[in-house]
Image (cartoon, rainbow, N blue to C red; front, side, top):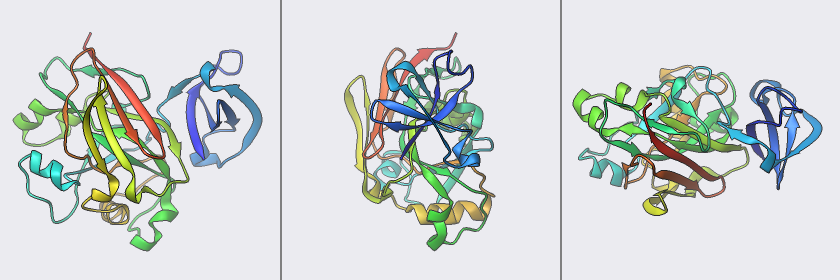
Amino acid sequence: MRIARFTPPQEISASPLFGIINGEEIEILIGDPLYSGINKTGEKVALDKVKLLAPVIPRSKVVCVGKNYADHAKEMDSVVPEQPVIFIKPNTSVIGPEDAIVWPDMSQRVDHEAELAIVIGRICKDVPKERVKDVIFGYTIGNDVTARDLQKVDGQWSRAKGFDTFCPLGPWIETELDPNDLAISAAVDGELRQSDRTSSMIFDIPTIINFISQVYTLLPGDVILTGTPAGVGMIPIGSTVSITIEGIGTLSNKAVKHG
């Protein structure tokens, strides 16, 4: 099931809605399915008449896993970690499909990082690996946008990865997906930059959620970015980065100059 969040035509609603994508239509849901469940209104709208938004706006946090592909750790001159390396992006960094990634004035290099994103569906803490599926609502695509020069200057990642617009998510949530061996790629203006499979992750999804939930209580709508393959690189101003994950779709965003 593909669940989207979208801006409908004004005659339907002045506020964003959620719906299930069926072919070229969206069937409108009552409320946010993360909190209200899947309750259909029976009303439908054409997909080409709406603007897709970030499929989830985390009310709490986006938790990211760093260096989770060996080749990426190597390209960053880092050793493969013995346990997951985690950090947080603020929820104010989240944008949706086709929204602009804004280069901050203080950075001279802004990079893409293609990632499989997990959407958490319930409050959970200390989740055993064998029960991880119980807390996952679905999967979407994420881009862990990074001001690489600032990351090197700071020696830590909060500023470099936390700017507004630095966490594109979308285009929808796929609730029925086996995430263990999916093709994942990123292209900038059609030029392939990253290409790998999720089976190359150092730490799998049960390990990631088990580890993170020992640190943070996870809430409905929290998002976990699971790491990026090798090939990260700059998104020049005016260019478009497109991230594709098998079984989900493609998330595209254009980089623009601040102001």
